[in-house]
Image 1: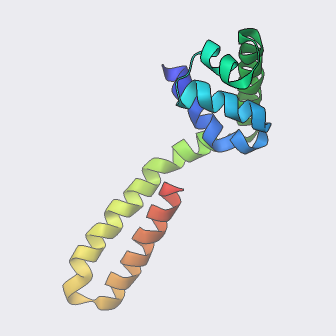
Image 2: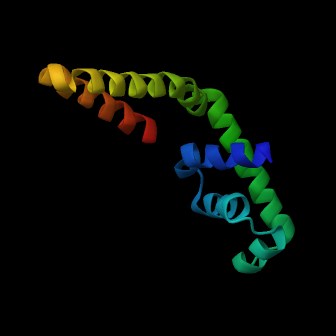
Length: 119
């Protein structure tokens, strides 16, 4: 199950770098949970053709991650972003009554961190 999640996540990061066919087949297999036979029937190819496409596309995804490490870097940033979000919320609460300028700045920091985290 962990590998399925990893491939699905790598597909989110690097899917646009695959061919349309590879991306579509991986999406059907990992995100839509279709079997090799179901995908083969839908695509008009053999089960072996589907399997070969999946294996080649997976290899490309893992190779891209090995070279670029975007997923790894994102995972390392997540705790820091969550900390920024939580601490800026605390600053907002403390400063809301006493200092409107600090409140505004904390709000900007929080919203920026949330936008980065959600991308």
